[in-house]
Amino acid sequence: MVLFHADDYGVNPKQAKRILACSQKGCLNSVSIMPNSDYLQQCMEQLHSDQKIFYAVHINLAEGKCLADRRKLSLLVDRNGVFRQSFVSLLILSFLKRKKLQKQVQIECMAQIQEILKYADANDKLRLDSHVHYHMIPAVFQGLCHACHALGIEADAIRWPVEPLSPLVWNWKVIRQVHINGFLKNMILRICAVMDYPMVLKMGWKRKRAVFFGILFSGNMNWQIVQQLLPKYEAYAAKRRKNLEVLFHPGYIPQGGQLQDEKFAEFYHSKNRKAEEHALLKLRPGRERLC
Image (tube, rainbow, N blue to C red):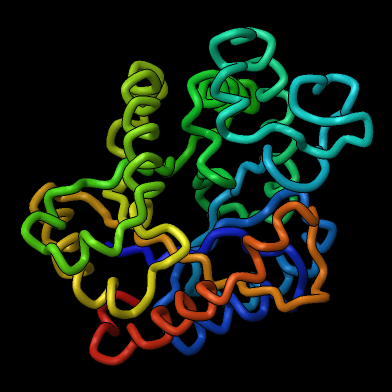
């Protein structure tokens, strides 16, 4: 199975509608929901009207306000309850204050998962990932696992954003388009994955990880790149009898649109999001078997 996936669903209703249009008119069949969105209820109502789409809890420790008591989250939020840590700063805290960070992450993850479960149907399967891939940070990953255990829930899938490099071999035109940040991000996530793997085995999540395509070109998954590389990643996943998750960020928000956090304005206003939306819409012809 191929999951054509969109992150960051639900920042505001217009953004959510724009993402869902990629499902109705294109090949999008999976989204990640921002649990701490001020518009969660309205966006969930829109989502449930599209019966063919999967969804995941997009654990968010990067943007907007926390859902748990801010007084219990001193490492994660400021005095207003707004998340204040970058990926790198949390990674450092993961080593310096591991137990304290792990506990605070567990508290917030429980609150965010429970918020999404309010809208879940009995047959819905819980899928997990995170905003900016924070869940791969070792102490954060442990906190998320403990949250699932405390809630007594079984995850059906966990995002494993470690992108294989072999599909790119000898494709120099595409390799030249990879920004150095893409390679660095993939390398850091690979290192985190090694540290997280024992917990994966303990949780029984080994077979719940799909092959991932979308790190090296994160924020630039345009039609040219997807057209050239998708068949190679599909073949790679099929050979290993695994699902394939292809990550897009089509949720463009124009200037003046509602945001959860102004420091993410450039991220949502990027015109590359329109290019990724175009790629999802263009994938539909001849690919109905994947939709």
